[in-house]
Image (tube, rainbow, N blue to C red; front, side, top):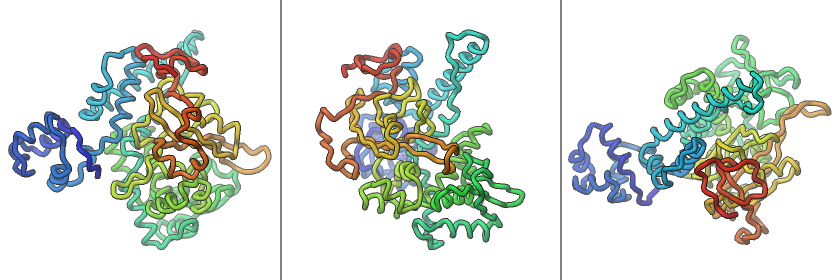
Length: 462
C-alpha cells in the first residue's frame, strides 16, 4: 500500500456515491467529521494514512481509488493526442487532474482519438489506392486497446499470477524442470497429448504451438527449449483450466469484438504461462539475488532473454513489488509489437520512436547486451539495456524472426542491475538525449530529427 498523502477527492466522492452514502453517513463510518470529509472530497485536504486504512477496512481493497501510478502516463497520452489534433490549450496540471480524477473519461477520449486516427489512416490508404501518392498508407494498430488494458493493470494480473504460483507449489514443480510435469497434467486432467514435431509441421500461433481440439493433441516445434515448451504448454493449460476467469477479465476490460477478444485471450493465457514457469516469489528472489542478470535468469528458468525481460516488467504485487521496469520490443522497421510500462514512462503512439534510443543499435551488435543512460525532454533520466533476439527453426536457410528488446528503469534504480557495474551514471557526458518520437518531441536542435514537431509541441534545448 502506498502510505504517502495524496489528493483523491473526486475519486472518493465517486466511491461514496456508488455505495449510496451521503457525506454525513460516510464521515460517521470513518470516524471523522463531515467538514473534514468535505475538505478531502474537494481536494482541500490530503488523504492521510489512517483514513486510507479505514476506507479499506470499510469497503475492502480499492485499487482504483489509491493506485495512481499510471496517472502521469495517462496525462502524457492526453497531451500527445491533443498535439496530434493541433490543440495545445490544456496545461500539464489540467491534464494530470483529468487523468487522476476522471480516468474513465480520459481513456474514453483516447479511444475516440485512436478511432479518429484509424479512420484517417484508412482514408489515407484508400487515397493511395486511388492514385493519390501524397497520402501515406498505414494500418491502425489494433493491439493498442489490449496493451492499454495491461498497462492500466500495471502489467500485473494478480488473479492469474496468484493462481499460477499456487499451482506451482501444489504440484511440487521445480524451477527449470516444469515441462514434463505440465505435459503430464495436460494428459491426466484434460486428455491432451503433447507432441514434439518437425519444425515445418507447426502452423499455429506464431508457429510455436497448434492445438487440435477435436483430437486433443497439442503440437510443439522441435526447436523450442525445454522452458519454452513449458511456456507453450502452460498457455494451453491456462485456456483449459482458467478459461472462465480469463473470459471474466476480458469482459470486465470491455472487449466485445472478436479480434480484441482473441488478442486479449492470447495475452492473458501467456501471462498465466509466464507466471507458472517463472513463479512470482521464486523469480523475484532469483532476480534480486543475481542483480537482474537476464542471461543468468534465462538459463536458470530455461526460457529466452525476451521472456525474462517481459516477466521482469510484471512484478508489481502490492505486498512484494519488484523494480518498476518498462519493456518494449521492436523490429528493424521500428514497428512496436510489445510495449509495457507500469510507471509514468510512456511509449509514444504518435510520431514513431527515437532513432537515438539504444534498442535500434542492438540490431547492429547481435548477441551483445547494450546499455544506455538516456534523458527525456522533461529531464527524467532512465537506464536502458537492449539486445537483439531471434526465434525460429535452426539451420541454414530457415526463416527466423528477429527483434530487439529493451528493458528500462528510472536511473535511481540502475545500481540494482549488474549492467550498471563500471559505469559513471552521474557523468553528464554519458547521457544520451532521446525523445518520444519526432512528431511529439520537444527537442528543437536534434540532429536526427526526421519530421517537424506537431503544432503545440513546445521546443526545448538539447
